[in-house]
Length: 366
Image (tube, rainbow, N blue to C red; front, top):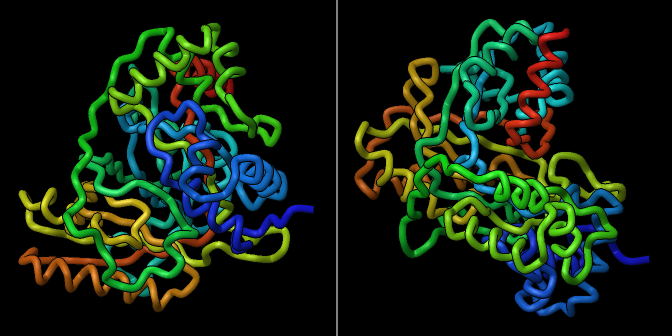
């Protein structure tokens, strides 16, 4: 029986690459992981499949830059305390357009700390994010919500294994570059390829030429599938080929990848968001860094970032190092906070207009 924990030496070598280092569309992703990790491709495929079956890896898929395909936002919800768990369940189980669903708290009562339910929401082109969230609010009896769409992305890549030993203050030589958010229009054929491309792999699909079956699913030849995928990649629609670890719950063997999930908030002067985001986003510990406008409910926070770890105090030391770096860069911080993740579920957000129309029809009947 193959080892299936993330900290097995061979698995760790594979995961250090496969979590978030295969950028864009790659015709032979498992061979690319093998080449970069120094582990032969047959072992790579066998180990990834074994970890997927065991639940150590929760999904293997081609990610998309969905912010360029559908209107999306981070949403903070104020829900009555006695309804928070049922609201969480509804968002996770019954809204395919909500991705991350997390209960968050702060160490002390502070701006926005009564917004305990946080979700990421995307709606396909042609539909309203505001109206979608208003509908959700009626379903879960939310008192109010705050939409925080991304105005720019500085860091996006969840590589937990390779971040385990990063020291506070470790950062890239240059500031992170902003990735602008801009919606891309797709043809029906492009949508067909994209929807086949993004579907999760079952363990049986972890093999050479993994896109052959997906091309058949999309109704095109393999070469046409490659051509469309590579064109979409050039248009900044494709994210990474990734193996996503189960980082919320312990593995079957009781091993945890992470224990703490910290959402860092900073309020920086208007007009300096790109500069500040670049300085924050260059820090290696961060899995996400965005420019989002949180509004007066959160003291006008406009830079947000996420870090994961097994030691809460160490995460606070990482945060302090970023604060010092901003100060040394001459960027004043008028307010900062940390929202800690508790109960959490994650699923890919649906972005298909057809699926959205079907879902709306179902909601009208309930």
